[in-house]
Length: 233
Image (cartoon, rainbow, N blue to C red; front, side):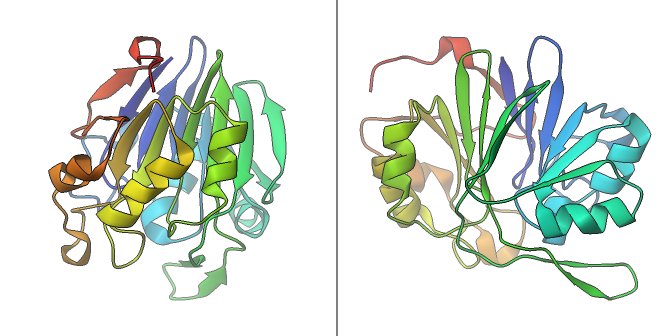
């Protein structure tokens, strides 16, 4: 399995058969290396409804007949836009053809603003546990640190955790470093920073705060082969 980062909160997972995009905010994302026309996802996973996470989901899904997995209220809205969307809720898991998806807690807000200015309620925000090919990926979405991350770490052998560090809208470097202590992943990748002025951060500062866990600061387009991650804690 190969996992790559593409600016803001965009993560691409490539298994032997499938390509999965998480939070595909491409158009308007100054940090991404992706182009909507070039992407061919089989599935799209969404953590919450904010426009900088839903991004280009509708176009990508329609162009590629991709299935979208999202919190149920957001999925209902996307279905009304002609998208093949499956709605799930916190704590729920399902084994799809491309892997197991489970939505976890995230403490944030969630709404989508249409081109006409209508604000659509997006349901509860979520984090995502994704499991395939014997590996576990945790994408925290937009969230503050919370105590149940310890339970997530104890109950799931997390290979790589994608954690926001931008502060202002989510946890900052210090709280994200504490989240690493709770989750105990084999590797952590910082996300959701430097896209907009309020969330500008130095990822090296975050790295300096993390103890005993590998921190991989990925530039947009860089990837990590999960087979290469050390099993040493």
